[in-house]
Image (tube, rainbow, N blue to C red; front, side, top):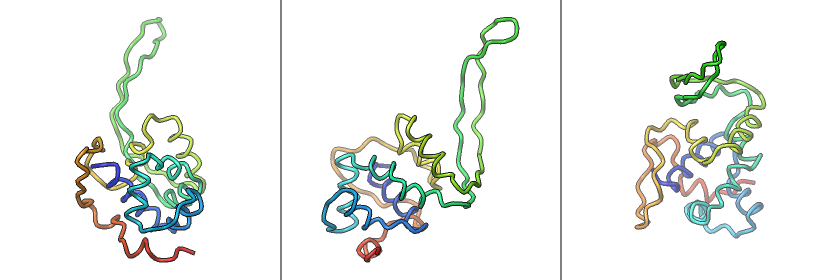
Length: 161
């Protein structure tokens, strides 16, 4: 899955929860609105998606207050010192976590700040199976897999005010 496809899914999920993408794009990036597809390409191509991901307005919509979130926690390995001073490697299996909090978006913003790739972090909250692939040089675009999160061009053209 390319960065553009993942951004389509992420923005689609936030818009389902009330995020005004057009208003955010014109207000925060200071660019004129020429269409949803071009806006997403600008975010993906110029790496401006960081401004979107770390925006409080976006985070409030993506992690809706009080909504039950289900996400995957990956497997982990870390060293731990035992009672006798011996260092052992602890291996934890991955698991599914469920979260219901009114301010979950603040927690997730803090977690995204410390991760190396915020898109990989936010991807865990979308019901998709594919891994994020590096951007292909050819620029070919494929359709997103899950139709529930497709960002419709007509929806993006609507006035979000």
